[in-house]
Length: 263
Ligand SMILES: NC(=O)c1ccc[n+]([C@@H]2O[C@H](COP(=O)([O-])OP(=O)(O)OC[C@H]3O[C@@H](n4cnc5c(N)ncnc54)[C@H](OP(=O)(O)O)[C@@H]3O)[C@@H](O)[C@H]2O)c1
Image (cartoon, rainbow, N blue to C red):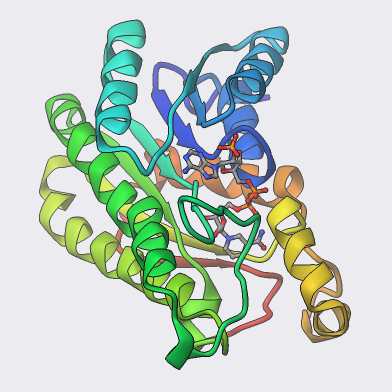
């Protein structure tokens, strides 16, 4: 396989499973040195070990992206270990409240929005993305090369019912990304967004809450299948992080099999 990210240093949040894990593995195969980040030490170490077993270089860092000190410490640990930072993937997202986290969104009417959920969803989503971007910026600017990929959702774009906290933080992440894209392009730093629809644990949790809706989804997706993290997210994230994608910034990549073709 072509080592298109050889010499690059990457950090991926929410990389203990699902989409983040798939991207971390793909970055390792593409030759990047990878910091694998999630809260659970055993899973980040297992993914880092998978990358090393495939011939790559990786460290696992246990970090809760909703804790500012831990975010800045994780970036520092990555830089201390590998000597810089070129690629940040803000993929982790908390659901529910800090006291009672959930595996995915809980459907609640807008007027009944729980303000603890609002705060926690924002802190682990838009705010965590901003913290990682602030911590990474000086290293990317110094290198004259940066690739930031933030995760949002078409649920936010269409205002999917019952998802107030999630929709709002995801659209804030897209606005943050566009703003940084305009400011940081001059330094060789791109900031893009992926809106995925891929089968993961979070997706399965959503499926058990809304089985009929999710079954009907497959019929709505023009490519007639639900996406797979390793098959579909890894290759796109490698492309966006590479030298060849330096002329695209501030864009939202719809990784949904054509489910939404919004203008
Ligand atoms: N799957 C989809 O179809 C879909 C659709 C739209 C948007 N998205 C977005 O895509 C991203 C990834 O979703 P996914 O489906 O891959 O989720 P997932 O399978 O549930 O994986 C989530 C990962 O994030 C970690 N994580 C959760 N809270 C964290 C925190 N506070 N700090 C650090 N790590 C944390 C989890 O590990 P620990 O529990 O060990 O921390 C896990 O490794 C999310 O931003 C999600 O909103 C997904």
